[in-house]
Image 1: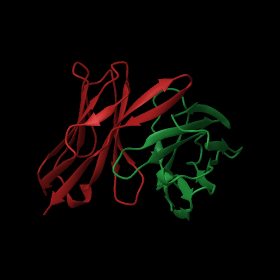
Image 2 (image 1 turned 180 degrees about the horizontal axis):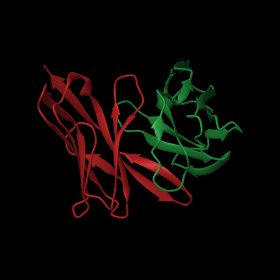
Image 3 (image 1 turned 90 degrees about the horizontal axis):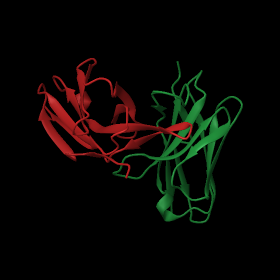
Image 4 (image 1 turned 135 degrees about the horizontal axis):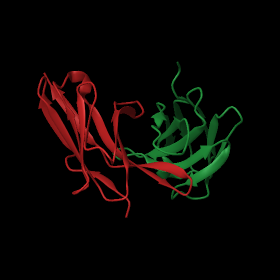
Length: 114
Length: 114
């Protein structure tokens, strides 16, 4: 079936440490993935995306890794800051029948401690 | 530039009532998608509209309907409200429905059904 799930529901880190959030997906035909950050009371905010023809993509303080062999994604946040505290979702973009939809997992809560 | 805007921010209804939620996409975006996010879960796809036509529908009952206007804004309607309809309703816009389009989300409408 269609599912995108996360390995860890909650991740606690110290300010300044690096954070790694993991995600598994089930549809081997998926070719586009997006990470979103959702702060309390707000909608999901785009962080970074990656296409299936890539295995790594870097942004500002964030890196996404894609392992198609084991259908696994990870989001790495360097030098984690208190403002990074939020729920993080990976989403699988599925295009079928002339439209696309995002399949989200349950999310991982990142708590950054000073 | 303004992002995706949704109204109202919060809404309280009773069982059996009907509700209309509104969304204005990012300027230049022609596609609007609606998602339902139950507390503690990831968003679930409801509809996608493009150029005023419904392009896709998720696994939601016929009580849920939507439409898109010539200016690309959209409304989501839910009839005969149930307690289980209580959720955050998110609207997302993207330039198109073809290919790898990032969907940008609004802050959502928090619906409480009593």
